[in-house]
Length: 175
Ligand SMILES: [Zn+2]
Ligand SMILES: [Zn+2]
Image (cartoon, rainbow, N blue to C red; front, side):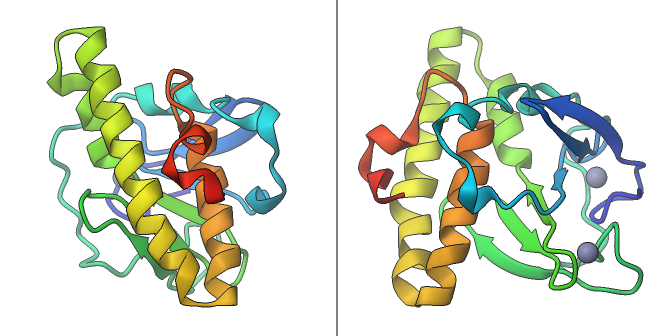
């Protein structure tokens, strides 16, 4: 499959019993098939942490000007469902197959910006707290339909969250 954001080929990667497709050596984006994340429970949390360690080119230009084609479905444009106010994180969802595209470039970047593990942990904690407690909660309060989406996205985030930071214990406990 081709990356929906840059012209790279996606590579399959197994994490926590789930196979995803990642833009390795490209933008660092992650494609999740429709895994019904809303049904994910505690054991899956942090299982996908290794997905954040994929090598990526710095500052990859997004050629698609915000509209990303589904890498699976021919001719289907994904819907942008969530953009964090404070961070450069985007979640697109395919209306056809229900797959999710996560552009978590900034999150992956935070891991290279800091020298010590302590600083990296702090940066990740701030990042996840912002996205969960502010942005996802806003999405949740808009409508019932969005509540289901917010839960799906929150669980997807928990899946890739570093084990030293579990958002459920913070303000985002609503999820
Ligand atoms: Zn890419
Ligand atoms: Zn699709």
